[in-house]
Image 1 (cartoon, rainbow, N blue to C red):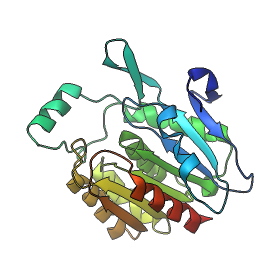
Image 2 (cartoon, rainbow, N blue to C red):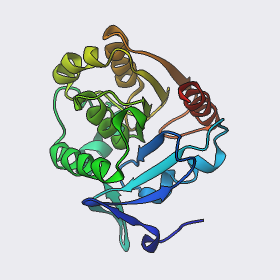
Image 3 (cartoon, rainbow, N blue to C red):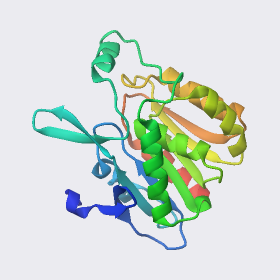
Image 4 (tube, rainbow, N blue to C red):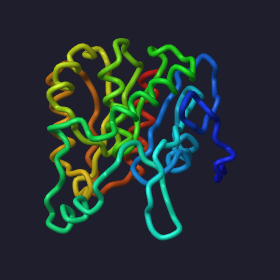
Length: 233
């Protein structure tokens, strides 16, 4: 099991864990959530049941964020933790849909340069992520002129709604996978359904898995990801 930053590989401006599978198979790029790292999502590729041996890239967030004394994590863009904690306390889930989160533009530029460094054609890339990593993956997918092979949104949320609504119809041949906990205390379930509705109204087809849980990736989601990847191979 990989567990330290010496295992990271430089890909453009970012570092990442890279797992090479079948050279003819698509490449899956999974962006982690706030306060996590490339190592958090890495075990997923070991438990999926797929017909092909996919290639994997797990990017490491370019921002270092403090979690507790002596501990830090990585992120793609800042989050106002005090406001988030207050929203959780009041059971008033945050709504990102009216704006492009501060710092998303920097993350987007770095991610595009990393994807160029990977050297895989867009039609062989499956982008995905968890939480704010899912927001970034969706943003990258919708903004790019070329159409990727797939999109996996794990406990994500709708951001920059007006732009995404404009861009999504141009990706109507793309099939997506989305999952969300019905009792997610970080990114509310209603926001996830709002994103699903936007994608479906734009002509995209996909599977949405709702599960009895919170901000997590439980077994039913792992099974759903396996099905989705097999459908793309």
